[in-house]
Length: 424
Length: 118
Image (cartoon, rainbow over all chains, first blue to last red):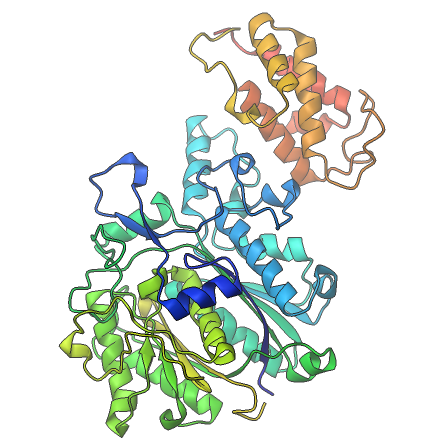
């Protein structure tokens, strides 16, 4: 019994609702802006995938603002990080798109919550600086729940009164793909009927600069070319923030309430590189196995895959490793499914990346299109095995493979399908 | 008690009504205990959980937990906020003794009175 996707919600650099995101994907419109971090124009980080319509630059929730259509009371704000605010807005959207209200999920033991974020480095730093400034004698009582990496699950569980499952995932840039995978399993096992999957991250100096110090970020100042997955000129990723949410349900539960079915979560797989704390295996060995396991779980062969949503972040080594893995899975059989690297438009949402890609795949399946790679000018010869359309392809992909890779060599792949493609 | 190097307006109170800011400035200028009480009252109202009757005016006898619906975390948040605003430290022992608005006002005033002058 494969779960079905009945709701999606977006607060992303390329749009803050389904229609806006789909339009950006179709039109190849990026969500990057020039940024100056810490007021220092000499820093090498010049571009970010920013979140529009929110002001959450200070650690004090009383200073924040957000789109007026979302009701976020102050008793909720007190324990929130900025990305928690994004997440609540995206959950509200996703519930509405699934035809659900807060009351439908509140205190329902068959509804679970699966979250992924790295926490709030900004709030953690601010709160501990406050503690140190007074010799440790006092600190913000909400400092822990607003800043550590479980902050999403703590806050959203209380906000939506979730009583089924509440858990969080910390496999870096594979985190929200893990969240989706384990939510799928819990529904398949009959433990739950419905799951809310949330990936969210902040985009600010505290979230971005540590990656610059790893030499992982692009140094480009031109927002139009900074993120160029699979391009010869790529020089690192562009950081992004926001929140993306999927609602998945057991098919019988969705049918019983007449819910919209946008896509089917047909299978997933994971495997690790066993290679490096941060770098991918150069042959993409873990990712290849994750893709093979996902397809095996969905009981389909590579020939059925109509589109691959690549993890590709625009780093020199990461994109190459993924290209090798995709090439070994498909090229060996003479297959070239169109590959889209949507981080060329959004930037890299880190823990949010997997849920954002999965939700983009849902849009592709439901909307009948495959995003292009508009920033690709000079394809890296080492990625020659990949079919990389520049423009949007106006075909409905009935079966999509979505990849995520995280630090420590953690790899996750998901298979999403249009309803009726695979028996549920 | 006045510290000439402090900012004229406490940033922690920046989003509060002007009357609360004025009360804080009055306290800073004169040490007026009533002004302290005004700020404490505003903080208690701000941190009170939702759903409590708002028509009843708060008195010194109003109990934080039983009457206003505070829980232990909300009390801790309120106390931290007041510590931040007035730059004082209130011990756990003091917090545990505070049950009413009046006791909280007294607690804050005592901490301010016992603070070394700048």
